[in-house]
View 1 (cartoon, helix red, strand yellow):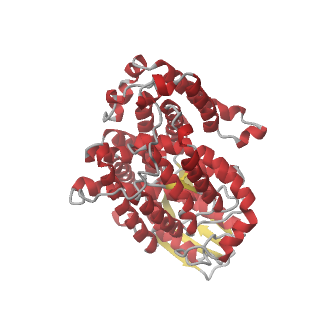
View 2 (cartoon, helix red, strand yellow):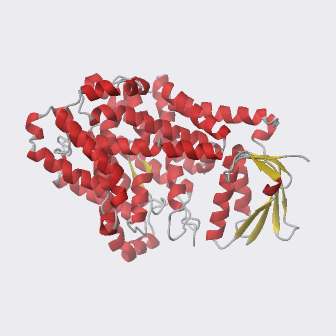
View 3 (cartoon, helix red, strand yellow):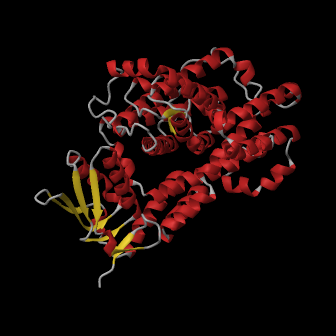
Amino acid sequence: MNNHSSHKNPYTLLDASDLQDLQKNWKTDMLSGFLVFLLALPLSLGIAKASGFPAAMGVLTAMVGGLITPLFRVSPLTIKGPAAGLITVCSGAFLEFGGEAYWPMVTAAVMLAALLQLLLALGRLGSLSDLFPHSAVHGMLAAIGIIIISKQFPVLMGVEPSMYAGKPPLELLAEIPNFIGQARMEPAILGVVSLLIMFFYPAVQKGWLKKIPAPVWVLLIAIPTSLIRHFPEKLPAYTLVHIGDFWGDFGFHFNFSLIGTWVFWKYVFMFLFINSLESLLTVKAIDSMDPQKRTSDYNSDLFGLGVGNFVSSMLGGLPLISEVVRSSANVGFGAHTKWSNFFHGAFLLLSMLFLIPVIELIPNSALAAMLLFAGYRLASPRQFRQTLQIGWEQLAIFLVTIGVTLAEDLLLGVASGILLKLLLHIIRWLILGSFFKPTYELRPDLVPHTLEIHGAALFTHLIGYKKVLGRLSEVSLVRIDFSHCQFVDHSFLEFMEEQRIHAKNEGRVLHLEGLEGMKPISQHPLASRVRVNN
């Protein structure tokens, strides 16, 4: 009942139950899909522009995410489409490949990443996301947020693109005073007003206003302003969204001529890594918000995502993921099934048929405001405070990941965070062999069923313990005994808390004991713990 796809082949297309879901829930899902469409349209345009793609390709990507991925056994409440978290990888690929003229080469890299994504799903390797320590992942996302802020601020100010294109994020941040001095007045004022709406509208969002996302209010101000102030006639073309002949340009857009180069494969794996990891994290987060307490199958969701990425990139679109902002809104709007994602894609298709002249009135500074807000959410001071509350070692991993990512790239940043995590464990006198080999004893002879954890319990052990707990999924009461454990890290405790909540949603009990004899390194309930021998 709670496992969304456990009773079905995870790689098949629609069946009778999916059509029954549509028949039963089409009204609520259509309404939610329409409201998500209002949110997705401007965000998709802005993400595409910031990534280096033609703006229309952002809408095409969201259309594919909505119309194609629900045909597979994807997570029921996630919305698939372009995401701010991949702006950094996309724009980096354009820069290193040679510029916007290399658009078909970038999409070719995404196509190969999509094929590898399908292989991961077929190999049922979706759980590999558990191998990455949470502080390193959150550090990666925070770094992406800072990069988005650095690249979108000059757009918010209406600055000529040649003044900031291709510059690294740290240099862009240092030049913020110069960008303010070079601001084009009317787009900048509209951008600042839009940014204020994005930040402060949620505080007054009550009653029926909850159904109207902040980006919709930005559009309701930006488009009339563009018309009244005659932006299309008096402002440079770079200050407004340009769609062009969307249907005339519709077709295949990929080129594998760089396949023999190292930089091409570097971005294949960056697309694969960031795309899969961020999407799986979003699926996990949205499952926790599902009123029906369904649990998605990571591998089937990854398979549908891979198909969507392949189709999108073949047509010249961006990589798509399960996007957290639109997915959270989808839950809030009352969606019941994956058909809300389909309806959001259908409304985007209609917008490309009938609304292109209106869309081209949107100033890019308004879109930049939405992306700046998205960047802030990823890198807000709250993220730093919460990480510090877990413990100084988690903050160190978080900050190292951010620093190396900003100075170098995402892969090196995450690798540095993981390396620091391992080094900190070595400092705690852990044996190297214990990093990847969990030590435990399963005691079915005891009442209740008992899993005794020995030695260390680390983030590198999560896949092994997930399999063990999977074998116990039919047991109504399982005792997890940490009394023989010497050290438990934060990622492992967070994993166990997720498993405990999941079991509770299924009417089972996972009872954790033995942690009270271990010393936490901070006051946070899920801080790393070490056993102190008396």
